[in-house]
Length: 125
Image (cartoon, rainbow, N blue to C red; front, side):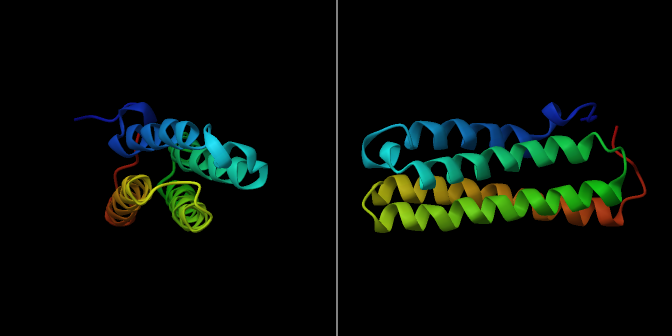
């Protein structure tokens, strides 16, 4: 499959799903009233998909790898904040596990994508 835009990337699509899910997760109960944590986890999740998009538009693999690193870091931040949410009783173990696994899946995709870009002479787009 030829990649013409960041919207073609599975990792970006999966990140978009995570964002929607995080916003739904944080809109109920105690989580919705913890403005600091709610906004931070929302911003971190959005940062994952936005950095994938921004790096893609740079048309330079070295730059893209840098932005993918930011995305990976933001996914780690989401994982960390999920621990805070479960420790405070804002989310269930099931919800924690689902969102944690979504973040791990995205991190794995990003890591593999970085490896590919570092050894590829093909510039995306």
